[in-house]
Image 1 (cartoon, rainbow, N blue to C red):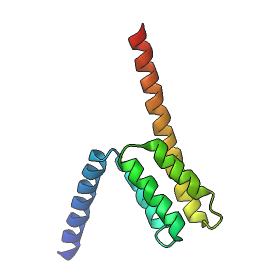
Image 2: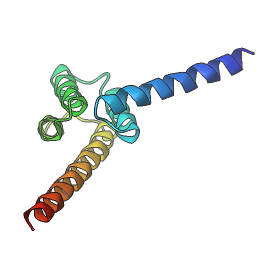
Image 3: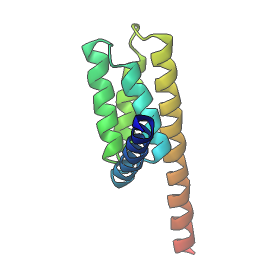
Length: 115
């Protein structure tokens, strides 16, 4: 019985988390990547944690360029573990691909409006 209750609690938490992330401008996939980065940096030095927090906050506010600037600065740290590097690189690639997709859509829309 406890196992069923635990599964329901996890399911509800996942659904609520997805709703919150969607409302904050993050997709569920991006939310999982953010969570991976936050976990990877949970025990890192304060400068790295602060930059990760700034980047995550920017993502949640929908400002991918500010987020990428913070994440790029974290990558310059010589104290990153392989797990931190990998989690951060995956998130950076995801944010860049979403940003370039958004830019491509905006450019196509602007081009169509100008015709």
